[in-house]
Length: 72
Image (cartoon, rainbow, N blue to C red; front, side):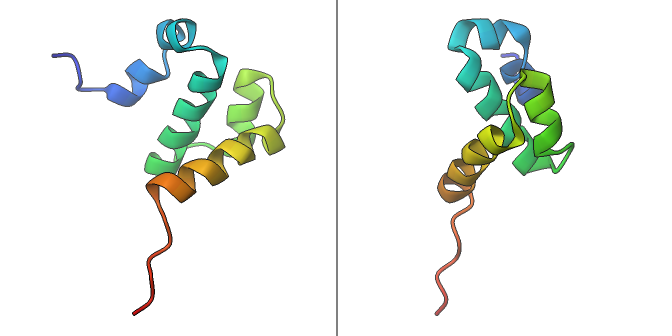
């Protein structure tokens, strides 16, 4: 199974063609949140959308994958 570099696979042009443009942006945002590499502005430039558009995806991803911990 080819999962050694899952982030690269999910953000590849082939995945973008298969899943669509929004998926490619979301995959790049999630990769950024996991690795800390790059910036949301860079992702926006890569996909030809504004940083604000990418920010909406980042907010949703943070809420789903990195919810705030509940204080005890």
